[in-house]
Image (cartoon, rainbow, N blue to C red; front, side):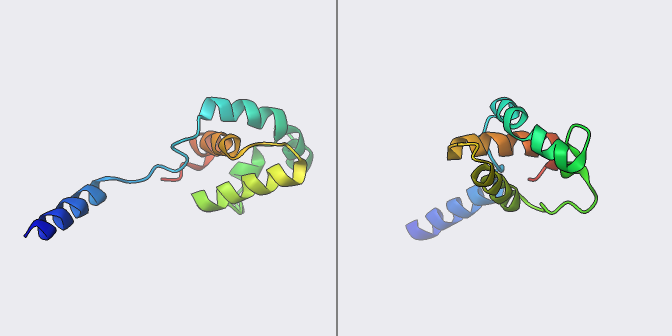
Length: 102
C-alpha cells in the first residue's frame, strides 16, 4: 500500500509540473550576450538588424533542443567563448523574444 501511495503521489506531481525550457537562463543577460556576439553576423546574412533569422517562414529551429544546439554551434563556430550557462542565457532570451517554446 505504501508503494501505491508513493507512485500515486509521484504521478500527480509529474502531471502538474512542466519543465520550462531554459529556466536556468536569464533573458536579460542573454540579450546582452546576443547583442554583442550575434547581431553583426546575422545582419550580414539577413540584412537589417539580423532578427529575420528568427522570424523567417522557413526557420530551421522548431523546438527548444534545436535552439540550444544552434546556439552551441554558433558559439563554437564564431569563437564567442561562452560557457554553457551563457548559452542558456542566450537561449532564454531568444525563446522569450522570438520562439516561445514551452
